[in-house]
Image (cartoon, rainbow, N blue to C red):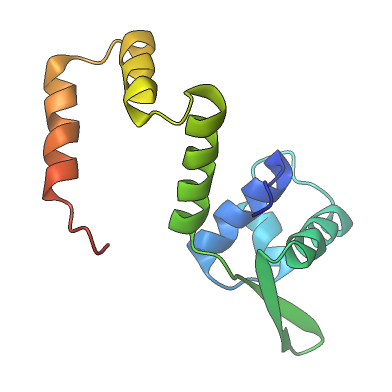
Length: 122
């Protein structure tokens, strides 16, 4: 799976929230300063060529929608991070973030409880 640029990821974040949107609706949700319509339109077409976005005709324009769930992309991105920076070890990654972010034992216990309470099918 291809990686997204920062601009592409911003657009995808909006599409994951809106589920379907035209370029104008995407621009409306972007932070100031708003990019030009043509810029966002180009980003959406790039996302489509990469296989992240599909479209359907609506009037004279198009509605765009994600072809990939956010959780799928997140999982792929985290796996790449772990493989590239932590030699494939999630334990090393968690240890690193605990040390660098000063996570308390209480926060760690909350994380472990949340992990243990998750349904493995989700």
